[in-house]
Image 1 (cartoon, helix red, strand yellow):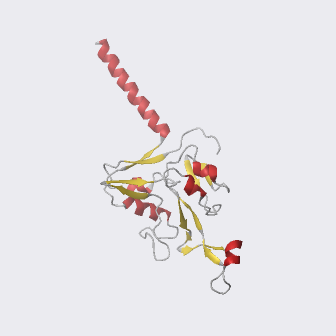
Image 2 (cartoon, rainbow, N blue to C red):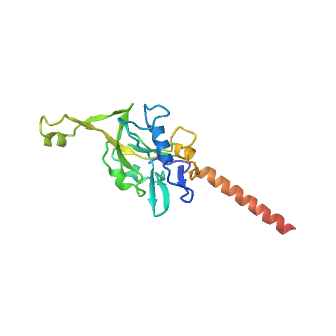
Image 3 (cartoon, rainbow, N blue to C red):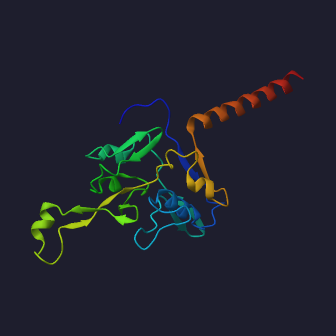
Length: 202
């Protein structure tokens, strides 16, 4: 991966606020559903495929999604360079992805999965590989199968805020931009030190 000037952004979740409503999953799927109308999420031909998943552990709920690692294991193991860093986001190029599943094994958060690829509500098909073609019994099925690609959070790249963050009714999700976060912390520290200085001078 190429070196960059600033750290990647990422979304964090507050499990004390999350109520498990799954609106984040629906909002995510709607934004990434190509060809769907604004009020449509999934269909018989194009199912709901969120890029984050809500997980329940005992009484707590928390969304699991990509953390956009600085030295991303998924990008490092991708043999076709389908995973790269773009504008502070670890991004999957669906056109390059060959569905080998190596990135799924490399991700330490379990945030990567393989899903069927759809375009305008229709499944994208691909030719069978040579081994599959040779092993198949002629006449039982055609020479195509549905294409699978790596799927993960892309922070709704190109949008002002991720859809999950904007639509969470409990404000349980927050987009963290490290550069801005650090600036806020430094400002807060400076104000705190200034207050201490004033009290000491009195």
